[in-house]
Length: 395
Ligand SMILES: *Cc1c(COP(=O)(O)O)cnc(C)c1O
Image: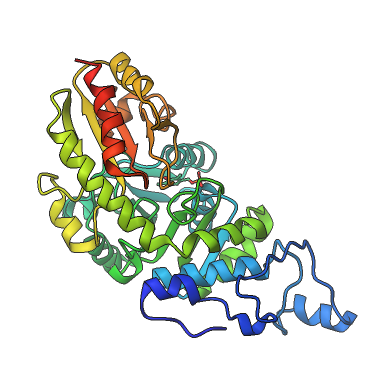
């Protein structure tokens, strides 16, 4: 195994793989194999007994996937990474691992739509209840923690309202009570925010987004303590089976090399678009965490390097006009997902958050006029030109 590098820009390129181990191949090879052969029956016995290191079957581990897991652990400053078939496979495996029937989960108010759906299913099937909190103060949290609270589950920035939660504060309250904190760090990426360094216990990513960065993979990763993730791997993941394919790991290893460069450019562009949107007469509200007018700007300064590539905004008008704005665009693509080279735009109330009941949507602040923009890597002037002409048509 390679020595861990200190600087993240070097880590993403070098950690987890040494070309000297594999015939000098500069790029980590793609081990596209389902199974691994044993030299003898006794070796097979030792491997399955855990007495000898080595691969057995790709659902239990694969060398290309291991490289990705080691890079992600280095980036998030965790002991180990565990890769999954999708972001939701990671979210569900961690929540299943941490809970049993009749437990309780305390969540940030505002969650990825499918995570909300998963919690509803866990409630119906296993009576695992959830409470939602804005987590603005320590007392907000203390008031909702119960003896059966199995974990605190946080998204920040929150999708799609871009509210922020002070992770250090949440981790301190959770620590008083001995409850693990799980953070979905998809929106920030480890380049901008590292929850484990702030005292949280498990970090999750939809690697589909900034980690891959090129819109060609569905994947997920968890990072945290080795004993915990070893156990998740050998119980929930092994038996439920949501593993990452070696080819997807290979694409993610390639995408990761440019993560710091890409994310900086996403942020540069988003800052420019934020400023322009704020001054457009058809826009009533802009939600971008790196703007001094954002209510949680102080939290951004405390825990995030920059504001990220996502902006949500509300237009003056109705749902129909919000949809019209999307239809007016030329090169900006109407699509869910985020963190790709292409600028993507979507309407949360009818797309990513359509599964969330209207009352909960209203509580989360997801109005019919709200639009989410994933600012891409194009020239910001071109992105603005397209948005401006689409907005101008609404007047
Ligand atoms: C996309 C996303 C997920 C789910 O990830 P998939 O890779 O689509 O399964 C979870 N959380 C957040 C914040 C996301 O944006």
